[in-house]
Image (tube, rainbow, N blue to C red):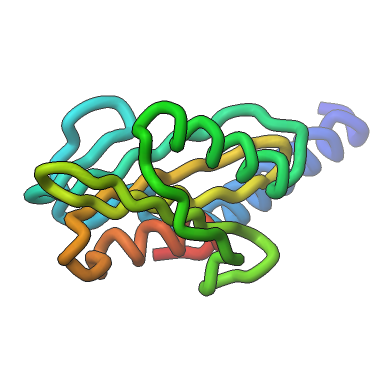
Length: 149
């Protein structure tokens, strides 16, 4: 091999190594530990549901959140409770909260973040009387804040 070829191979190997390191450091659990998968990107535990969707997106969090509010209220006739920065990493994610009334009142939280042209939306549903699940919170924080598990 020529020196130029060796340098190119070396640069490629270094780039691949760095990419693997960044991915390993920036990824944590994608779903709550111990929850059962029930479909692509969907897990459940008892009456709780966790759905993860990642798709290309070129806008900002404000626009993404605004559209999510409209979609949720129209689709479920739920009541929008409010929005706030995601507490684990303000500036990287937002959390929208909805009340869904009916025979089994529920709380629906939509947590969103945008990174490198990809929007990640996690929809977490639980009974209104139940506290947030620790495994769900850990997975949400890992996905929203891009931290390891």
